[in-house]
Image (tube, rainbow, N blue to C red; front, top):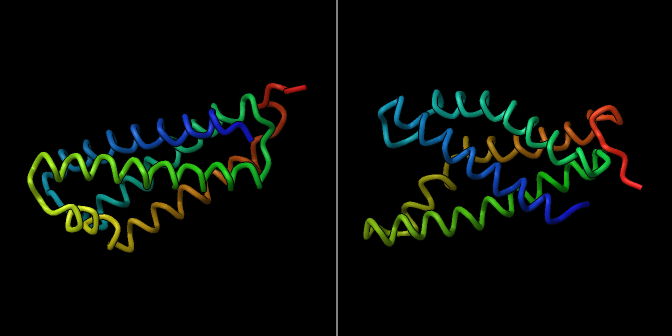
Length: 137
């Protein structure tokens, strides 16, 4: 597993997801995500995850195990970036970090999003074959 590339994958996924979620929130006009907003994100996360996975597996031979590990690492990177971003936002707004953090992490739909990321990266590792992979000696 290429850890440097996997960390980049996690950061890219986080940034793109952050932008997508912000756009969904702006379009919906509500500050708290409901099922409809999550459903839009779940649909948009499919091509995002598969395209980024395709980028990752261009230099690392795909496998189910590598896809699963890529998903785990992506979730870990996302968690630490959430701590950083939510901490910064709560400090800027003067709000309670715990309340802001729990707004996402207490929602079961959020965990479905995490499961989707894990399933999609695992699927990408399983499905992508030699036609998408540049052979590494």
